[in-house]
View 1 (cartoon, helix red, strand yellow):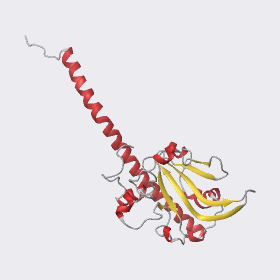
View 2 (tube, rainbow, N blue to C red):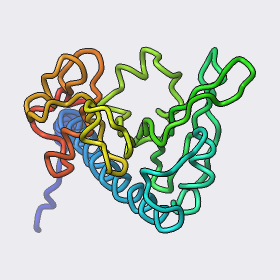
View 3 (cartoon, rainbow, N blue to C red):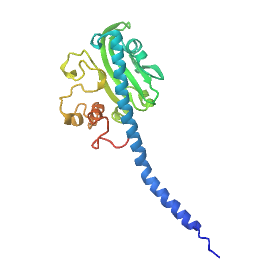
View 4 (cartoon, rainbow, N blue to C red):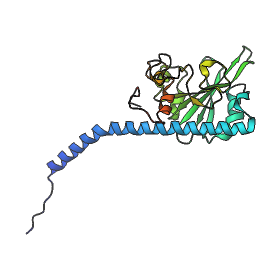
Length: 234
């Protein structure tokens, strides 16, 4: 009679144990790789869709350098909202201020926080308006809810939130890389040197404080996070 060959219980348990160790060792790396791909994909998608919206709005309102929104809400309602596919939009009030931003959530799970610069007096009257400001993009929408300039908001720069700028009519030379352009990765005060995107003490992506240039670093690397990026954990 032929003998039936089978694994013993001990052999099965040993095999499962080995597989468990292998999975435990490789899973974190796979998760980080997936997060990295999600960030890269959503950054590029946001950049494309937001600038398509700007172009469509220009066809309706004329050259963006002549736009005159009075605040963030006006900019969103009259210049952007009809040209973007989004899930919802809500007001975001800066703590201790009457300054109001707008959080816009997209279908892929990302979001952007709009902050068009303006000033007002104690009566609430607008005394300063511009056509531009910051677009804080969050590959995961929940991170756009972080309190303005909180510790998490600052430490998450370049990991969970990325700064873009919109200053099409700004005459100050510090904003020359934004002049006559749409929504671009933040490049104010950039000296034009590639290494400064990483090492600038003011906004470099490798700095310990304001990593405002991180979106530009990724854009300059064909929308992929470079190997020498300041963090491997997202």
